[in-house]
Image (cartoon, rainbow, N blue to C red; front, top):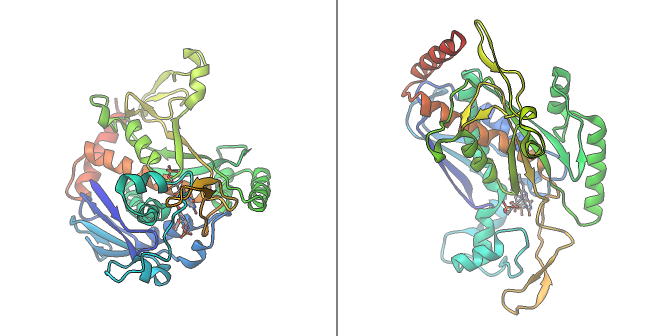
Amino acid sequence: MRFLTAGESHGQKLVGIIEGLPSGMKISKDQVDKALRKRQKGPGRGGRMAIEQDEVLLVSGVRGGLSTGAPIALEIPNRDWENWEKIMTWREDADLESRKVLTPRPGHADLTGALKYRTEVRNILERASARETAMRVAIGSVARQVLTALGIEIRGHVLAVGGVHAERADNEEYWQRVEQSEWSVGDPIAEQQMGERLILAREQGESLGGILEVQVHHVPAGLGSHVQWDRKLDGKLAQAVLSVQAIKGVSFGLGFEAGDRMGSKVHDPICYEKGQGFSRVSNHAGGIEGGMSNGEPIILQAVMKPIPTLYQPLDTVHLETKAVVKASVERSDICAVPAALVVLEHVAAWVIVEAVLEKFPADTFIELQTAWKDYRDNLLNQ
Ligand SMILES: Cc1cc2nc3c(=O)[nH]c(=O)nc-3n(C[C@H](O)[C@H](O)[C@H](O)COP(=O)(O)O)c2cc1C
Ligand SMILES: C=C(O[C@@H]1CC(C(=O)O)=C[C@@H](OP(=O)(O)O)[C@H]1O)C(=O)O
């Protein structure tokens, strides 16, 4: 399985190609669109989200709602394109002057990208932009539909925004609150405080980041492998998560707290029940040991830095005059933590499906399902 994306933030459209999905898999465009709409939401999003109404076009590889086994091509049009066509067109008469960025923004790819590619900042920021995560959600949503068909469930919640930490729980009522919450938190008091923190940030020309958690449930033991560095499941998940714009750290299970505890308070004792197979008494490892899923839920946390474009901009250097000036700002999100949660859930879905198909290579969904069931039955009947 592999995928590629292309597209600029203010270009015509985002494009994606998925290769290696078995045939006969039910693909719902509605599911993809639902995920895309959720990624656009959340308090703190800027004016762009009022322009876009993301919807996927399934261009190839799906007929009558089923995958054919051929590459799946996806497109998401940018509605903002009509305001940018003269500037972003490939044509030689493109207006390359009027939206030139000469004051690179700290925290962005702007300066280093322009130096590395010897091109103007706009050519860098257009591709570095998190607009690209819309396509990664669409692709991840296809992956997630495979997981759902195999009984694997992914969910996530926001644990903190701008220093406001939410109380967490693990019951149906809590997860329903997370689902209904615009911040994706299950703690109504923290939700209110996050809203207040956002108002303050807006007034001060500031921005906010936060902490997010993604959980993958009903993953059997044995996805990923200990035998080679680039086949380890935690390594692959970490790479996928860290590749998301503004995500600066990732941890599994107890995470950094493990470094403060004695070994006996970290490692999860093994237990066994006839008909259920092996499991763990606790899940401090976050469901992965030795680069392989161990049968417990996979729990990963990630930190998102505050949005780098600031309405009270930091100092930068003008690329031509070399004078110290304020960084450029056109329009920006102030906080995108709930949106990033949707992205993380979907990049995680991709990695898990990839690991599933690495263990059970299949041309058809029926073959995958059969191999999957055999393996799971075998684990239960050890
Ligand atoms: C969903 C989402 C929305 C974002 N929106 C903005 C934004 O409106 N303005 C901005 O400056 N950065 C935004 N970012 C973050 C930048 O794209 C990112 O920080 C930048 O490209 C530099 O990459 P890095 O932080 O991974 O090093 C967003 C990130 C995500 C995940
Ligand atoms: C377009 C999206 O996010 C964008 C990500 C982004 C950035 O610098 O990462 C900057 C902003 O773009 P613009 O300058 O057009 O408002 C966000 O709106 C999106 O999430 O779909």
